[in-house]
Length: 190
Image 1 (tube, rainbow, N blue to C red):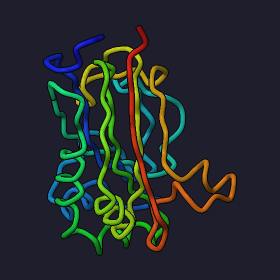
Image 2: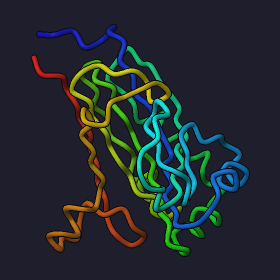
Image 3: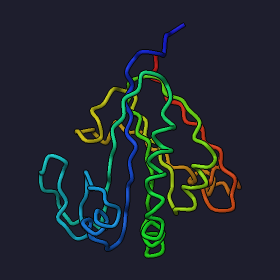
């Protein structure tokens, strides 16, 4: 049996905002957090290394990331803490949604090994109350932190709710008035 305790595993907890018109600096001011990755609607498109691409960004995107390292499999306490920090910004977050935007708390597993945990129902309810979605990104191969360069083609992205809405299910949706139970487990293949 493999010993999962003692091996370092990295993950990031992030807030990702997409909006049709807001300026990234306004998001940073309102939340008291810096956007580690951001661009404004209408700005010329560029690669992460700065190479100019054709066209302009169709919307504003802003991402704040907090890197974590653990020796066990547990990650939920970092999510609970982060969602708790967002509570005072409820009106701003709900306003984003009301004006055509979206906000997602993302747990990004960086491919270092087995991570599994249960996010408490109280935190899932708080996500819904704040108008936030929950996203999970799992990388098969070890990556640099979200604060470094990560090739997009290696990412597997999963956002709670898409499958449930597509199939008209009344579960796996994080919204006020709905039950939700999420368990995330990522394991690097042997």
